[in-house]
Image (tube, helix red, strand yellow):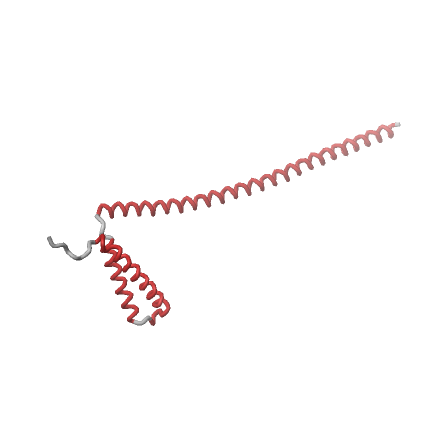
Length: 154
């Protein structure tokens, strides 16, 4: 039996992973250069970036074979559930903010109402005092009128 000299995927994986890291570092450096050059990026940098991206995609396909449709369906549902959960969390945060604003508004209104009630009570008390003073004055005037009538009759 003649065994093939080509390494199996499991044996080649560490080597491919090391190559992937080196290529990724080179790609990162070239992308930084391209960012610095902007629209004036030399063609050889653009070409090498494209070649490195293609090579990295090929390595990814070798080290991470495509998944079955069932697995993709599960991953899609998981991603949808995550997106839904993120939306619910965001909505929950918005609701909490609104509830806080409503609570603060109610507290402010309560404080204003307490101030108004206190002012009304103070005014009400003053009215009763004035009414009492007025009643005393009326009584004094009536008493003086009565006394002058009594003194005038004598």
